[in-house]
Length: 174
Image (tube, rainbow, N blue to C red):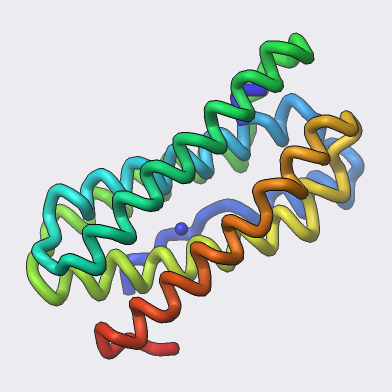
């Protein structure tokens, strides 16, 4: 089961379209989950290396740690289930959007960087939660895959709330 003005289209609507057509598979879900986590790991690493704001740095490091843990669990489950993650339109869009976000962030510094990073994290986690709730969990056919998605969902909610709080301290929209 290879399982967030700067916000680039994440492509998370694609699984909903696939699901409506009944064509999203566990292998595709696995790829989407791993890719979505990797996108946040990459952004978190960039933020931790760039920001001078202690709270933003702490949040970025948390994103790296937590999303790395989810990917480890997902990889272990995939190996156990002998599921090969299947690259798909959504996972490709996530990769492209994640790379574009990191590139856009690299042009910023200081408060502008912090605000852009945190604003993106708020939007990204909301979109990921929407995809988890409306597409990934309802369409996961393997019970263990579905259980993993249900188990990690509260962490994504906590990340969204943490990012919203941080956003309010940076003068961002709430």
